[in-house]
Length: 275
Image (cartoon, rainbow, N blue to C red; front, side, top):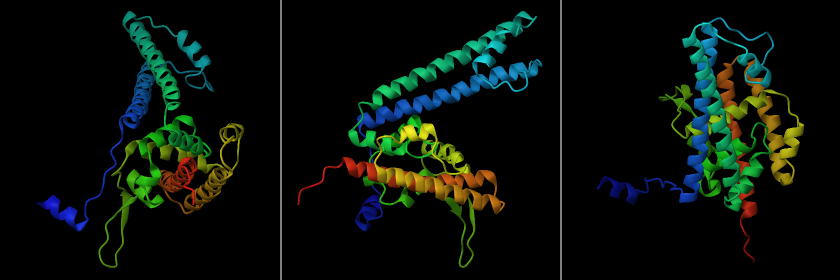
């Protein structure tokens, strides 16, 4: 009876149900994200073993490069148990790296079979700074049909859970931490991308390559995003705001540009009706 009354009053919100292809691609992307987390845990186990036993890499040696692996191969323990532990940790790191690489290759192949509108959104999102191919695929698979699901950028921001919580009463207005009531996968990838906007606006070689073949109106939105978000970052930083809160605020505004680019890309793939 309660559901019937809510439906009569128009209080129910329609929920988008993904089709089988969209859900399958989303599961694959999330599996790759889980593999990256397992890879990070395996690396932490190995580095903490080295730290406990006093084995520190030479100064200036970057972790997980070829030189770093050669340094790891030179380490040996006199205790057989510790040597077995070291070898097992290294094998686990290598196994996790191979797993991530295998899943990323699978994503590249499956995306080629995605609908034309999704491929256009993925290509358009890569015009943004800090959004490479895998990040664009993650955003596109988590949102799907953005133009029909989100009527405004503000609704997309609310869907991500990046809006601040509010405890207001009367004339008193008090805002707290972000609600986190939303898509955690989308929020994570957007906040990661937001770190790139602490640098001054520029178009490097990699970004210029990603923007090849992208419509001019989308690259203009991406350039506008660089200028606005960097200016916003500097303004909040100079005001003394906490660095993590600043990046979260930048990520929330970045969702607005993601919405604008996605709408343009989807509209370009929609056939126009003849008048």
